[in-house]
Length: 237
Image (cartoon, rainbow, N blue to C red; front, side):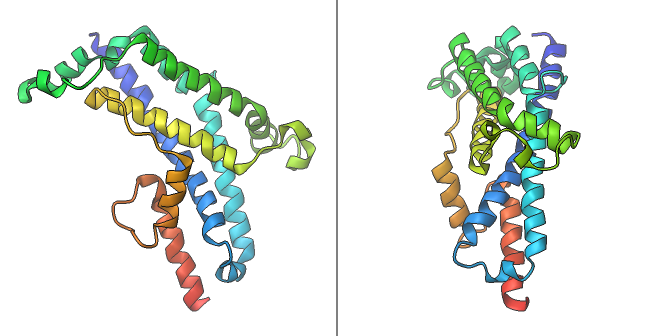
């Protein structure tokens, strides 16, 4: 396969991966601060302005990052990434994987339980992308452009009522983007799909992070740091 195509795909994927991870960890922290402080707000209430500012900025960053991921004019967007795959399905094929793995493994045994990437698999990814773009387009695109990007209005109240949004909706968009990113990564490096993260599983991970701070996923690193600050406020605030 043309090495330039592979290089272009890898460059596109690295940007997509970085954006998804950046936005995801911000909205995960936003969610965690809200659910971990239920009925235990006293430490947070000692510095309320700081935490209100933090929550606002976490949401703002996550929306701005959605804008970069879904910007149809960008040279690095989810649209561009999937277009490259659509024009070069063999990028994710088992044949290409074999050339990347080289002679160091018994490849036939390695792929014995795997299914080659197909047009139907690609169409599934495109359907997910279209659904997520539709969710982003209204209201987040308007919010990003009008309030965050250009300050055409001063608050969300000035956006039409039909354009209101919920932070959990942003989180769920990022969960799907994270799963799509992981799917592409596993297909490229291992020739298989991956186990999808769910909202319930993420919630469980956050609630259990105080008991298990080892081997936590990268998107929860900031949550771990937040808990350190929380306990310092609890002890010394």
